Length: 445
Image (cartoon, rainbow, N blue to C red; front, side, top):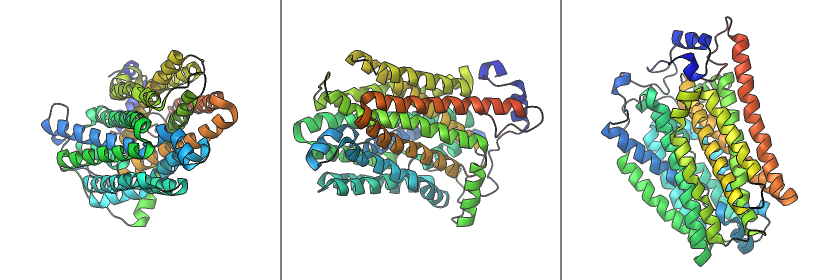
């Protein structure tokens, strides 16, 4: 592929070609892979199809559980008391728990294996999901959700590391896009199901149904996911973990990707935490079932995440990030209109831009990290869910004080941050192109 095809400079191409990312076991012994690239799974292989469907179901279960209360916040506020910002903690606590525990869980996956950790995480999370409907108070509900989020922390980083080890490099963006697509389907179906069920039987029954759906997904995931063939167990020694994390945080490109993921998720978390309140108020005054159905726009995210590989092929990674940011910003501004069709179109654009940007950034992390891939992915996921927690909380506070325009303002600032970071990476790469290695300074192609 030529520089014109990727949007990268000729110098970057030359530097990349001179130092390819190795496929063998890394120097730390933590996330290496054994065997040739040809022995890994690729589209068309039976194992690839099983793996894709299994991780798709894991993504469905993860997002359905993680955001199971988001569409129900007005009902939870009414039943348990509290304002919109109080109820938003049922979302922020779950994503915050995931953000805090994703790095320790990734370390466990280095020692005990990706499939083992993902299976255990889903088992604990779905068990808690069956307890959530019986929460007697808002503080108890928030506490259960925090534990549930911590349990789910074993999924995202382990799944990305599993794919990086078991899938051929050229198919990695597409494979991660399918996993992210499962996230979008889980987020969509969870909100739609809870919206309609809650309208008839209340929020407790609604989250209980989501728990049962997640149980079915967890069982199917464990039965379908192929055993790993390229995993090498690593060490649980804290010194090794700290050194690996420090190496990743010293990489300017990885830091930029972590910030981009956090900012994209700040937009998404804020918008979808508050949108139920906005649509329940005048001039829309929609019933809970219809509010839940709004999340059908997640299907757009499924398509845009799955298409991330093609976008990168045509525009390069920086071009794909610019497109995602621009689409998200256009959707935010359009959603300010007092017209339901325009608000829905705005949500479509926000969702498409977010999922495309997230798939591009997360796959770039897996390609950039030359060792400790689980830790690199864990740091991305931690930043990503910190962004979700911040977006949920700050977006709700902004809505409480300034209405929907306040929430949109928070989102626009976050999108501008994505653009500034991407531009700064491009400028740094150009400044360093005349003799300094650029692997860590520019977005990988």
